[in-house]
Amino acid sequence: MNGVVRLKRTSFMRSFTAIVAVAGGLAAAYWFGSQLLDEFRAQQYTPSSHISAIEQRVTLTSAGRRIFYATSPEVQDSGQFNGSCHSVERTTAILGCYYRDRIYLYNVQNSELDGALDVTAAHELLHAAYVRLSTFEQRKVDGLVRAAYQKVKNEPTLKRLMEYYKQAEPGAEINELHSILGTTIANLDSELERYYARYFTNRASIVTLNQRYTQVFSELDQQATSLKAKISAEESSLKTETDAYQNELNQLNSDIQSFNQRAVSGDFSSQEFYATRSALSGRVASLNSQQNQLNTRISAYNTMIAEYNKLAVRAQQLNQSMNGVSAPSEVK
Image (cartoon, rainbow, N blue to C red; front, side, top):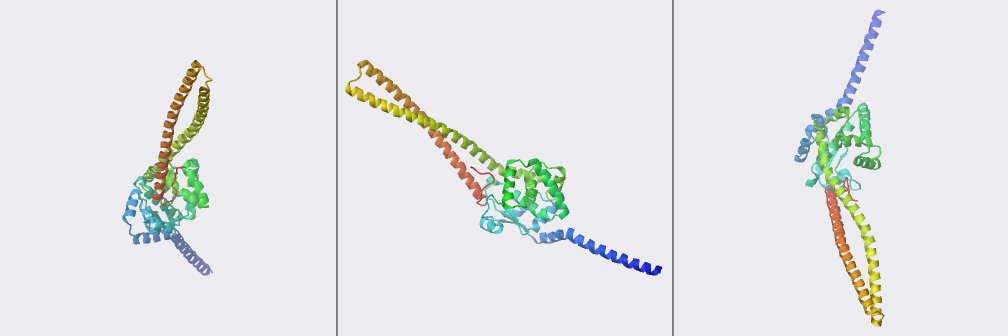
């Protein structure tokens, strides 16, 4: 009987051990399978000079490099990029995309936008990293991202971005925030900072690159906004003063016509004639002075219009250099 009991116990333990081994194997496959696959794919990938330069500037860790290379990142020109990312119909600047576990980057060649390509690569890498998180890790990281977002959600640029993603990619807001916070926000809680340190050795340098290239748009937008306000104020003032000038001119012309008629008919005494003519001459001189002042202001106004149009052209050129789609900040 004891032997039977021991036999059953031994069978149970062996079965239990087998189940544990299988479960452990499945867990290992779940946790490490994608990492092994990434390692294999990364080893098969040969980076271009563009990609190698990006890798250095975004300061990838070994884990970050493995994921980056596993996605076979590719820098493409406009036509090819729009085909890869299906971005022709987008309404905001699309400089990169993560699609079917591939990273595609638009070849930004405008020297004013130095850093845009690197920041975009880091952004897309974080998308690839996010989908590789386990369900448990995603839940934890989502909580950290939401908490960080609450502290910066009223920042204007971030607010516009999230409004865009809410419409363009509903349901993907946390995924996008995970990439946005990691590449654009300087001060994050220590736990979230440690998480991003899995992928970057110097995340602050990426934030600096982002600030540098987006500053081009910010300054352009500020100049345009300031100039537009001046143009609007001057336009209103000029209209008021031009209307007043025109009314005075009409009245003066009427008074001159009346004076000439009276002079021809001999209605003036000699003293009255010279006094009236002198008064009219004074009014003519005053209106001529007003006209000169208005012309000077109109010339300055036209110069402001021309300058504003130059800003609009420059904004358009920057937009076109960013995949021909609207830029993060635009002249309105």
